[in-house]
Length: 480
Picture 1 (cartoon, one colour):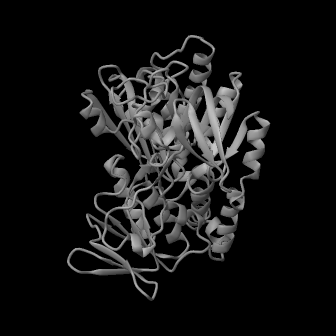
Picture 2 (cartoon, rainbow, N blue to C red; picture 1 turned 45 degrees about the vertical axis):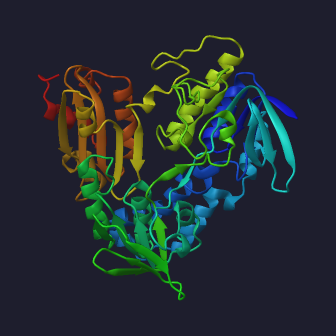
Picture 3 (tube, rainbow, N blue to C red; picture 1 turned 180 degrees about the vertical axis):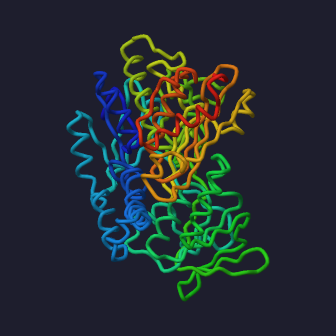
């Protein structure tokens, strides 16, 4: 039996942060990992996907900018893009990440963990070796999520791509069918269209349905300009792969769409099905409900006896974003250390040991072309929450900095103002390179900065950030 103060299951970005914060708090920590240290974000999600997107985005911007356009004489070097992607994943070698774990004073245990009792695990290594592990104070589940495959006849036998396959592919197929209009579907449709792949995208509803409607509209328009065949309000009735290797999707009405590969991107499912959660009275395969310090809540709605089990990242279904999972991890790691030492836990809203921002202050970027950057509540969500809001829109292309940045700049900014409190509760930017506008909006939302004070936050000229001034002018100084 190996014993530690804290054991973290899952050594992805989220698990690493839980372990690091607990170790910095003076506790002995072990990370248990069944795959690669660094997890989904490092090898199959955030980093490789953005590497696949970036080169074509830069090329398109250069082609649209006089002076630079004349210097662009060749086409995108797709093999070079894939090679650059490989550099970000270290060719799926986690040696560098392991070196960080060791350097942080954290033990690494390779293998798959299963609960055998309270604070106890059995870890089975790839070679079959089984090691019992016990935690003195806490165990944190940070195993993430996996792609959800819909129950479409023939799909499972058609060897579909998930996001992992799309981001780790060695070459671009000639034809790609994308099922799903969320972030993954939109980003991968954008990336592969940039490689010259003929992309067809099927979405049961509008693209990016959880964003402001104008975001999905602008991205749909742009994808179609890139040559993507975007079908909205359409789902496949059957998907099969023939003996010739061709994927054939049957649509309502009998139309058949052919492709070389099919990417399914309709949602996620928690990686909790094989952890032995039933031993603890929890449901295997379910999302784990947690409080704001990330303590897992049992069927009775309270933390398990002893307050020892935590869940951070995708598995708790609060905000399926790497940065938000890492934020939860920092709160959880600090809370674990505090509770282990008998110190006070600051669990009031916005306290040191809670992830309050998960509720209504989540920032998110979809790296489509144009980018979609948002934080907080959409106008519809704010109204549903019972807030008396005013929505202010401004065309980003009318800002001097945007016109300098790119000829014919097209994009929209929106701020959602809680009229009763005079603060911004949501903001969305759609346009080229708007991702870096987002943190200013995040600070305004999290800090509940009064709109009347924002008049004194002077944007530099000529930058795209001047859209903040234009939004305020549209809102009206007297209104603030």
